[in-house]
Image (cartoon, rainbow, N blue to C red; front, side, top):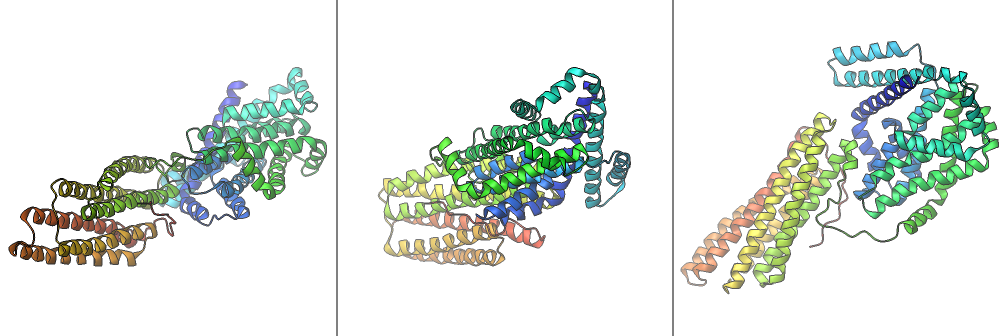
Length: 547
């Protein structure tokens, strides 16, 4: 009996995973767009959370993703509360589907799915085949669990225990909580509950407290995922638990009328449990959503303090977002732009240090260069991790291009470091530039800075107009470099500056010109993306790093 039960549970979970993967491959970009329209409007957040969970078939996965998004700074707690409540509603779809009697359809579903997967050449048809196979395996597992429980009818102790649960709802809550925390899937434990109900082994009055416990137990996944995240992400996980506990307390108080209400919604016990699951989460959302500000205030008191900003840490990336590659790629763009902001600050500081002789700026440049190198390593590792997921062909091309981009940004940082070394040499050896030379350097730097700004604006917003501006600024830098080289040679011939200063001046021009070359490389990535009609993360709102 137990072997069949666990085998059925394994098939159930595997089928649900196949369905989830197939749906995510189909709807990956749509998930990203759903999150893009997410605002501080908590009601919209509920819709987004429900829609995403309906696609990935797991409130735990959605909540873990929310923890990751909060940790990556994509959303705040005000946005997260609505998404979490919506996820709780969306996950009830699984129970509603399970309540249908598809026993006779399962073999045909698996056959059709296998034929599509094995013989279809179209990618969309193969994904549909995966979805249908997952559906069939899920119900095969459900039927196996249900059949394996038939012998329990003959065990008086078991039937007595189930009846006694009606009189001890707290025990039922604890049982559901522990079982779901272990299995890490409320859909699976509710599926087991429905399988028991199908065999007439559990009355609805005993099933409801277990159902409420299942809803609390599903929070364990997000709690585990929040370990090692920032304060806000941990608060999001605690917020999820708080919502479920408050809802359970409310429903235990009114358990008898709820049991009566659920009993008249359907004849089949499995459908009654599914309806109770939906009713619990919808009612809980209606009751608690207006008090979301109070819930947030509560979790802020439970986990007090402020996050400490770490420049070396990835600000926009989180491994939990890897479950949705389309979102992860958009976040990589944000992180690369942040890396570019630091490189831009270093170029700015290096020119200031050359002109002013401020040694403190040189130290800041070296410190920032360490950050740039570390970000290149971490972003590169994240890009590799994304490329190893079930990522679409278009997203994979973006990832390959972004590998090149982070190298270009790192090289910009290297040239800024070269300029810092020139500033240090100039300071140590008391080398001075003529006022004319300083004005020429300022003119070149202004165009380089404009090229950097346009390059990363193009990358963050996929803006072809900005790409064209990068080309214009780079040509201007080349022209100015050639012009000012000639001017400097004339000054040397007239003895207006010494040879040592002349060598440094030419080195500065060379490094600035190479920075503009790397800007063109960044812009070329956007140009290539546009030509292949791929879309990066549009309208990316990124605050510039403070120099």
